[in-house]
Image 1 (cartoon, rainbow, N blue to C red):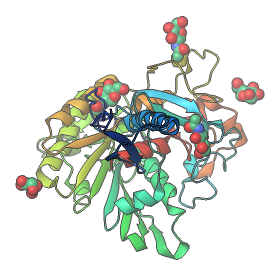
Image 2 (tube, rainbow, N blue to C red):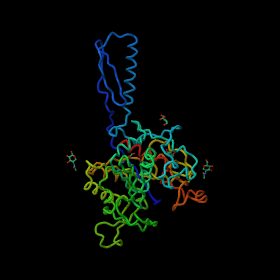
Image 3 (tube, rainbow, N blue to C red):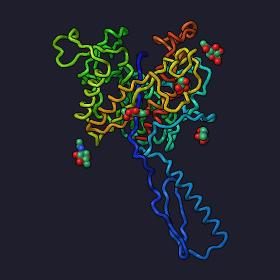
Length: 426
Ligand SMILES: *[C@@H]1O[C@H](CO)[C@@H](O)[C@H](O)[C@H]1NC(C)=O
Ligand SMILES: *[C@@H]1O[C@H](CO)[C@@H](O)[C@H](O)[C@H]1NC(C)=O
Ligand SMILES: *[C@@H]1O[C@H](CO)[C@@H](O)[C@H](O)[C@H]1NC(C)=O
Ligand SMILES: *[C@@H]1O[C@H](CO)[C@@H](O)[C@H](O)[C@H]1NC(C)=O
Ligand SMILES: *[C@@H]1O[C@H](CO)[C@@H](O)[C@H](O)[C@H]1NC(C)=O
């Protein structure tokens, strides 16, 4: 399963207003002074009778004012999914930032994404933090994550990019759990990490198109032989019941050509009866099948549904004006140009996702990671990866044009930021 992954995500619409949580302005003229107390998160106003103001008290007042200002600042920037558009912002280099895990400390990472273990020497790509324009994204807090999952099941469904997000999530939390209080069961299409004391599971289910295809279980390398059953989903979806948090993705597997072979309606003609459809048309039918399944099988009071938007690929260095470049090979810095968008994220596919999401009965939260990941040409596995279970050879490494993987992301890395956003929404 080394082929395609991809996702992107969008966030909830922002109302473009700041939360007004400091509701009251207190004027203390003669009779009262206001003392402002702030506990860690919310403000409490306490009124006390106001004596004559000595210079000391005046300076206390000033301090309180400053406090109030700071507090308002902090409060304004506190993360609120309704108010913050997390997908507009910039990457900030933080030299002292350290990921919560490494590809040596976390035992659950695939070779495919263990870049440093595989020989990547530069590590700056791990030290960029996403800074949204109008809020601060909280750091990933593993304890908080496990508390939110107590007694619950979290299931990631999708392709190898989604598997990356799942492994990132597992690695972000697993290190705070003692050895005998956790377990991992890796299966062919379904893998389960269990945090025993929390009675919680963090799972992954392989379904690269979400709908059924002839290349789900045994991957057909020749993309022309792949056939998508765009209106069939039950074979996969029967494994998604009774889950508390569902996180989907699907994109990159659809991008194998301009047209896709699809089967729909009656299968009476067998696989010979396929029809070729333009990729966005096939994608739309496939996603509608998924949306209908969600709307008729998911009780939104019991299950929350998330969708990670397309993960951009970076295989054309001309996109970012590196005419000497070989795909994403040797890139060590993100693109810093605002709103940079390359050819690896298809806007037509994004608009299909957005329009289907809007029409669903069950609310879907988009983890809109496309724009922020677009900048990260430096963070792919590149030549520090494997093929067919074996590390690339020196020869293969010397030929990035044919062997660099500019689809998958090194871990720790960019998918940790996707999970930072996901946890903030959770
Ligand atoms: C994700 O964000 C982009 C802008 O960065 C937007 O164009 C797109 O519609 C969003 N996707 C969804 C599904 O909301
Ligand atoms: C950089 O990371 C360090 C360590 O986590 C943190 O203390 C510091 O506040 C961060 N700096 C910025 C500017 O976010
Ligand atoms: C969900 O809860 C609301 C409010 O309690 C209720 O009105 C609604 O019928 C419930 N929906 C389902 C599908 O159970
Ligand atoms: C690439 O060059 C073009 C033309 O000079 C410019 O408009 C564009 O912003 C550049 N792109 C990046 C990512 O720097
Ligand atoms: C890749 O980067 C290294 C170190 O900066 C440099 O020595 C090497 O020539 C670069 N390789 C290519 C093919 O650009």
